Length: 295
Ligand code: SAM
Image 1 (tube, rainbow, N blue to C red):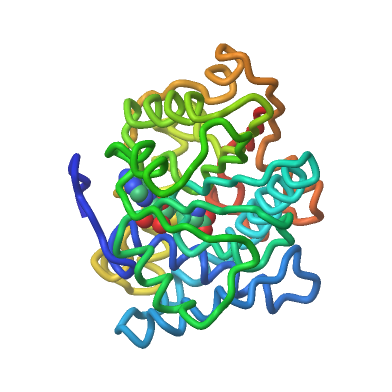
Image 2: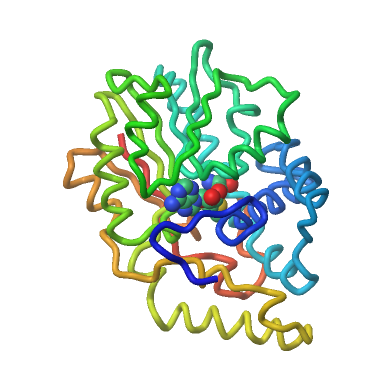
């Protein structure tokens, strides 16, 4: 599915379905021997999507998703820790950009009086609202249904966001789906909305991730997996087709240049730290991402 400047999607389509892929990985983690987190909501999203006609990935794609499961688990845990630490530092306002089926507003131990704003495409957030209609969030929850290429800061303020309050903002599994210019604008806006004492957490995709040789190896592995399974391309779309593969500003550099105190950890190091080394020798098993935190 080719991307366009103003494309939109439902939860079972294109970029929306990537949120289901992540939820599926989380549901697997929740039932593993020693889970890094518990997320009872993830399986509920999968069941609700299946009830709408969505199909679980075919067996060989499932194998690929399993290969990235330790990465997905480590990533979830890292962002969980970020929000819990932000709360420990007194931050009571959170903004989850491209929240997808992230259930942190329901499952994390938020401070009393915390508010969690979630931004994503309207149909993604309405699927989430329908699925969790009978569940009580663990903080005040505010859905802000808007595309992140539009004027989301205005939508956020109109929904009650207070730019004078310190905020914990997170961008997990988002940046490759934004054009490079859209990424720059995103950080300018986060910066503008961040009162003193704010924090930001980002899964960053830099030059190493978008390296043409790395991406070509990744594609070739996917082709071989499809071939071995006798599958065709329409059955197993490559998420790389949904990315904007363009040169990008380095997130850590951008934040430092704008006065943030930054710490960074590469995916492989993070996974080792959580005792979750890559589970298979595919390029996707340890994506070349960097986890960047600014304070
Ligand atoms: N952050 C969630 C997580 O880690 O579970 C979801 C990650 S999922 C890979 C990507 C999410 O980004 C989807 O929910 C998609 O709808 C959202 N997204 C991508 N581009 C977007 C845009 N331009 N505006 C709003 N949401 C967007």
